Length: 179
Picture 1 (cartoon, rainbow, N blue to C red):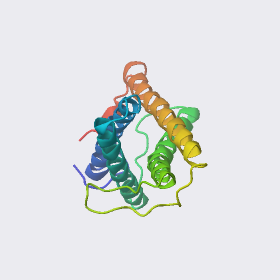
Picture 2: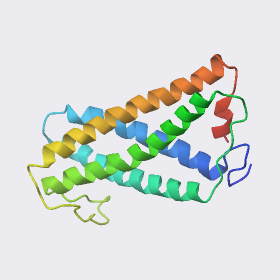
Picture 3: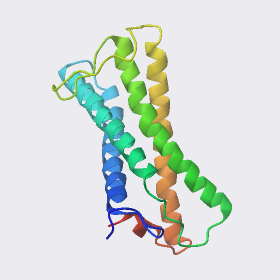
Picture 4: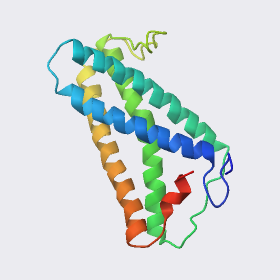
């Protein structure tokens, strides 16, 4: 298996980024949904801290993946699909990059607006993006929540498209992203 992408399939690095980010993002979304309904207390504070730290990891991975993508070719579809499906696939993939950048950044803005700097596993503090601002805080919180739900919708669409290709079209599209 190639490390870099070829015209026919994704390489090991792209596959690694795909599955690592997918696992971390699904865990992060699950954690986010769980922690928001907890009563105030030590557990909630600890989970919020983890959520922020994982968000930093996701941001770093998304930037790394974008950089890797910029120096790699994108494999062509190995089967015939209508133009609208190609458009939809490209749109969903671009939306994923948007969400992978926008969600951590809005989370960072929430922490900054609340005056709570983000600690990265106690190793260092991230600089605040803005000064504390109680007026902007609820706007950033709402935006972060909407983006999270948007990402969930796009993940569901992505998974349904893979299932559609496997069952309806009898095309094993999943093998392109599997080692």
